[in-house]
Amino acid sequence: MAIDAATVRKVARLARIAEPEERIEPLARELSAILNWIEQLSEVDTDGVEPMTSVVAANLSMREDVVTDGGDPARVLSNAPKTKDNFFVVPKVVE
Amino acid sequence: MTKLTSLTLKAALDGLSSKAFSAVELTQAHVEAVEAARDLNAYVLETPDKALAMAQAADARRASGDAGPLEGAPLGIKDLFCTEGVRSTAGSRILGNFTPTYESTVTANLWRDGAVMLGKLNMDEFAMGSSNETSAFGPVVNPWRPKGGNAKLTPGGSSGGSAAAVAAELCLGATATDTGGSIRQPAAFTGTVGIKPTYGRCSRWGVVAFASSLDQAGPMARTVEDAAILLKSMAGHDAKDSTSLAVAVPDFPSFVGKSVKGLRIGIPKEYRVDGMPAEIDALWEQGIAWLKEAGCEIVEVSLPHTRYALPAYYIVAPAEASSNLARYDGMRYGLRVEGANLTETYEATRAAGFGEEVKRRIIMGAYVLSAGYYDAYYLKALKVRRRISEDFDAAFEKVDALLTPTAPSAAFALGENADDPVAMYLNDIFTVTVNLAGLPGMSLPAGVDANGLPLGLQLIGRALDEGTLFALGGAMEKAADFKARPAKWW
Figure 1 (cartoon, rainbow over the protein chains, first blue to last red):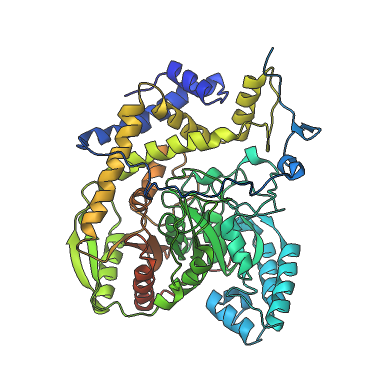
Figure 2 (spheres, rainbow over the protein chains, first blue to last red; figure 1 turned 90 degrees about the vertical axis):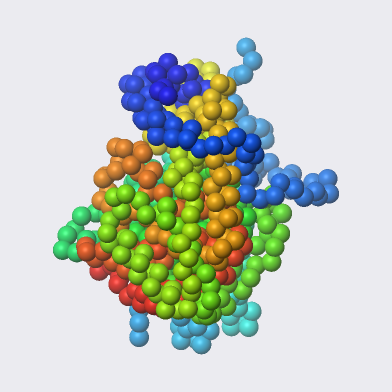
């Protein structure tokens, strides 16, 4: 399975990474090499095998539905690139 | 008297307890060693003032009879752990000067027990790498050099700063994390001891996420006993991590020195790979001989899906990473590069903030999760993951632990594998299986190669059976009597 330049552009866009045009072909080559190597997984018989998403039994424990933290906007915002009046300032989303 | 920085953690704690020296004296000696070793690039942030303040408080607690198990012990912290009020970068430009307003559970546990923080340790960006060369701060240099040469070697990765700092005596022990081998491979490359505990033993809360189903914190130290002391403090259930195991933490140090007579040790034949240096094979045989002499029974076992572990890992880990790293969008913390609109701001921020290896893995992860490829790659990898886990289940019906090499080579030169991602990924060939199955694995130094560089052996245990690894590790450490240390050149 090879990845072409168009696919790299598409996936980079999905991942919200602006890859410069000169990186597209090299990335396609690098990712194709990795995928070719990964291709050997097709040799493994996995018919009827349950996918393994976690090594820990998936019984999430319940807790009381109460506030355990919060009410501290200064701490929440302390690393923000831009803030105003206890809000994050972000680029305009709706035109 | 031995230099204070050359003491084992255990000896240092004994010395503090007997008032042979104070925590301030011990910490001051380490602060000076750290300052003198900047050529190694092991620390990305030194916190000497904080260290001395913590040491002073430790001395006061000890004087009032209130000493914790690590009271006054100076440690280094991998920069993947969030530390309150102290810059935490995960080795990435995208976190910029991110200064957490909270403390990771693992480091909080260490401070609760009296430990002292010397600073934050260098690492591969977001723990993605096997040589420390993906760090935004530049690579760590291994304190070990080949005999008669001065080539700069990698300390391994991703916990390269932790490994180098422990080996060069820039701390008594360090925290590290291991997603595919990031504790054990650097331990092997630097002649130190590292253990990745069972998945869920240490809380992941406050540890910057890479691949959440694989990430696990653990200690690096200069002896098996020191690693056991550190893990005992680091581990424990944490309600803030839903995958943290609600089980009691055993007294790990008490296992070191226990008899291993009668334990059955599996030797997985699939770990004899083509092109492995004869020295590593010979070391493995030596390890088998040591365990036999200690009374263990050696059993050949088969883990037939071993060779599929790395390719499965390079689907699962990037898939999880692409999801976890979506949070770095320049809005709430870290770097922001303004674009013409929101999407372009995201794209420019992530292009500028992430390094090449991280971008490659995010794009790979997004690809294997994308419509049309999800079943062929991601789902397939999860099924292979179960096969690998079942291999271990079958082996552990016959044996109590497994013995393997840790890495397929000794430390290599910086730059040697930098152009070939797959060649770099092969570093983790013996370690990554353990992460996929969630098992504990320990690397300990067992000998040196012809160039005088350290080589490690790996012990793999049943889930939650770190105790047996500490017993076996203690026995092997005694037999190996590994005394080699890097000659100081920095």
